[in-house]
Length: 492
Ligand SMILES: Nc1nc2c(ncn2[C@@H]2O[C@H](COP(=O)(O)OP(=O)(O)OP(=O)(O)O)[C@@H](O)[C@H]2O)c(=O)[nH]1
Image (cartoon, rainbow, N blue to C red; front, side):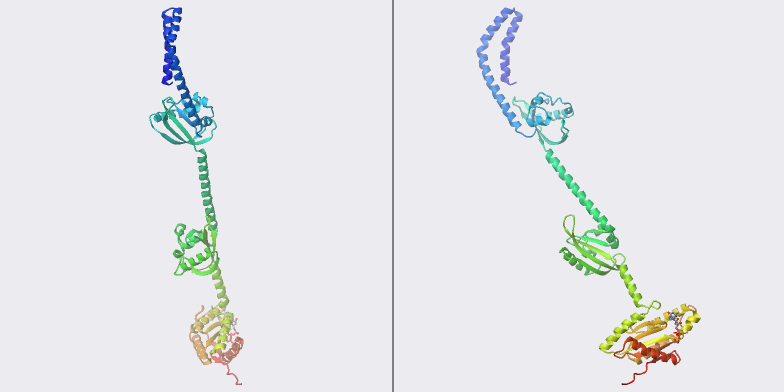
C-alpha cells in the first residue's frame, strides 16, 4: 500500500470511528446525527484527496502494467519476489515453464507445490543474501518438476526495488538446455570418434601382429608410427622404443639409411618398391634374405604413410643354395661332380679357344680299387675316395679345376702344357702312393694311375677326355702307379 493510499484510508476511517465511538457512548439517534454532521464537515477535503489519490493509483497501475509488458517480452523465465519468497510479478515464460498461470503463481500456488519444498529453504536463504546486497549467478542442472524433462539453466538473481519502493529479488533463469544438450551430443560424438579411432588402430595392430612378415609403418618424415610383433622380435627392441625412430636410426650400416629415406620419398610420391635384399638380422647378426615391399597408404587421419613389408626368404635362399651345392658337388667327396666339372671345363675351353692359353686334362684312377672294396668293405672304399679327393684338392691351384669323373676316377683341368701337367700328376701320384690312407680298418696303401691330354682348338670335352683316357689305359697297361701323356698327334 502506498503512503497516499494509507492516508486516504485513515481519513475515511476516522469519522466513522468517531461516530461509532459516539454511538457507543450516546444512544443511536444521537450517533446518527453526529455521523451526518461529521461527514458533512469533512466532505470537501475528502473529495480533493480522493482525486489526487486516484491519479496516483492509475499512474502506479500503468507503471506496473508497463513493467509486466517488459518482462513478458523476456524469453527466459523472470520473476520478482518479496522477502519471504512471495512472487509479486512473473513473466509468461516463467508461468509457462512451471505449467501454471501467472495468476496462480502470484496467488502462491507455486510456492506451495510439494516438490518445491526441498529447494525452498535454499532459495529463501539465497534471497536473504540477495536482499542484503549480494548477487548470484550459477548454473543448475535439474529436472522440470511437472514433466521430468532435463533442464540446464543459468540462474541470475539480484536485488531490485519494486514499484512500492520495497526491496525485492529479481531473478532470471536463462535456459541453456539446448546448448548443453548439443554440447553433450558433440562431446559424445567426439568420444565415439576417439573410441572408434582407438578400436580401428587396435584392430590394425592386431591384424599386422598376426603376420609373419616384419611390418613397419612410417610417417611422411620416415619416422616409425606402427610396427608389428615380428618387427619387434627381429629388432630386439620394444614397440615403444621403436616408435619415433627413423630410417637413419634403424640403418645397420652407413648408406642404408640414406637409401631407405630416398625410397620412402619415392613411395610417398606414389611409386611402389619391390626389391630383394641380403642383410643381417639385427638381433642375431645372422645372414638373412628378404623381399621388401614398400607402398603408400593413408592412415585413419587421411595422412600418407609408407608401409614397408619385409618378407623373409632366408630359408628358401639357404635351401636353394644347398640345392645348388648338391647339384654341383659330389655327394661323397664334396669335390665338383661330373656335371659341374663339365660346365666349368667347357667355359675354360671356350676361353682358351677365344684367347689362347694352354690347358691340359688329367684323368686319374685308383689302382685295383675293387680289391679295396672286396677286402675292406665298401665303407673303407668310400673313405679312400674321400681322402683321395682331399689330396687332389690340396695340390690343385686356384685356377685349376678338379672333380670326380665317376666311380674311382678323378679328373682335373690344368692351366699349362702336358709337361707341367705330368709334373703335377707325378706329384699327386707320389702324395697318394707315399702316404698310406687312414681308414677305419687302419692305414691303407693306395696307388693311382693317370693319363694327360692337352687341349687342342676344336676339342670337345669328350674328345679331350677320350685322349686322356687312352693315356690312362697306357699307364695301367704299363703296370699302374704311374702317369702317362697322350701320344703326340700325327702331323698332318
Ligand atoms: N666304395 C666305393 N666303391 C666304388 C664307388 N664307385 C665305384 N666303386 C667300385 O670301384 C670298383 C672299380 O673296379 P674296376 O673298374 O674293376 O677297377 P679297379 O678294381 O680299380 O682296377 P683297375 O682300374 O684296373 O686298377 C668297382 O668295384 C666299383 O664297385 C664308390 O663310390 N664307392
